[in-house]
Length: 331
Image (cartoon, helix red, strand yellow):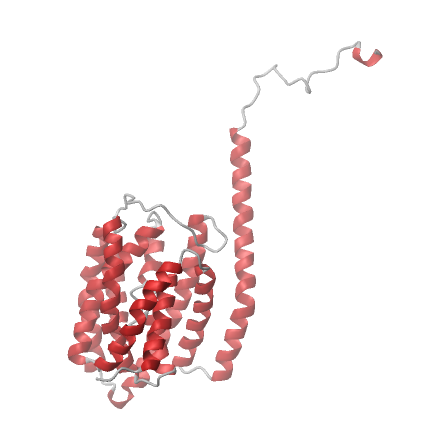
């Protein structure tokens, strides 16, 4: 086993971004391995999944100690995600892909990255609505609100995300947290992240076992990534409170969009054009949505303050409303 310094640096960068933004590492690590290090897609997915198994528990433990985890949700999610994650690896092997396995895997991974990119945008918009902040970011007091769990949709969500993770290593943090926002709007941000991190541990463990048995795992590749990713995630988390995480997520959404389009086979010139358009049009659309939402909230506050203003009883007015005394005009 040999340690690759360039992979260590790549893992450090990805780990730092994961710690800074809280997004799933699979959406960044796997494309980096494929595009920059020319690793075969199956080996990239297998090694990234196993590396994630060593990165997830630390964050999950922190949220368990802070009691920002909805354990009922975790249980129902894992009921679907754990068997689906293991099955996703087996599915890659039993389907008749043959020599075209890597090409098929690139397309599946590309679709998953496009979903992750859309998920970042949706998460930002929902965050703006929930927190009433310009960038959809902001501190939320850790609480444990009462949430009515929907078992069947939650199990289905876990199964879909598990299948994605097993086949592409993408989905644990990029897909689940966005759908949870839509399904359970009463969850606070801290509990969303905590629930997602805790359920990801058994999910990734099942996917890791599948890739160790049936995938194309590389020990040297995984260890090199972990040497950089673990301290990177630690330092990223340390500076996350002072860094513009919301803006960084917008940039990552565009990078994931470009990576996803490239993986599904879109010509380079079209990928370049779409990326430029997203860079130009995206901020304008965001400002438009933000301004419309801010104006609507301002109107609602104005209406509430008007309704709450005490009304004078009939026949009683203010001094300004009283008619002038007959002699006042002759003085």
